[in-house]
Image 1 (tube, helix red, strand yellow):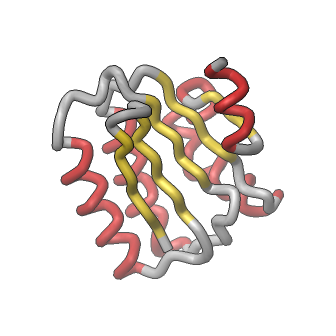
Image 2 (tube, one colour; image 1 turned 90 degrees about the vertical axis):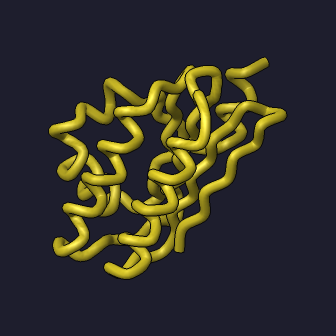
Image 3 (cartoon, rainbow, N blue to C red; image 1 turned 135 degrees about the vertical axis):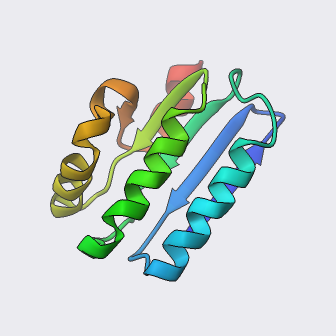
Length: 121
């Protein structure tokens, strides 16, 4: 499952990825993400990607995962936060897929949304 929310008041662009996405969901996610990212200037927004409950994905979905990352990294944000997966195995998969995008250099890695709120104070 995925959810994309834009909170204009808080200036947050929130992506939540949970469970195991199938190919149909992954394609729909990429299309919705592209539509939302082109909606307006997001350079004053915080990107929050919550992958805390994301499960292992099929290798068939890696191209779609990379497409989503390309869309995210081609969009300027004020800052990018990633709430990391609770699963160590999922963390390893995300690191492997995201290695070419230098995820650790492009995201502020946090364990929870509360860490983001604390940093904003």
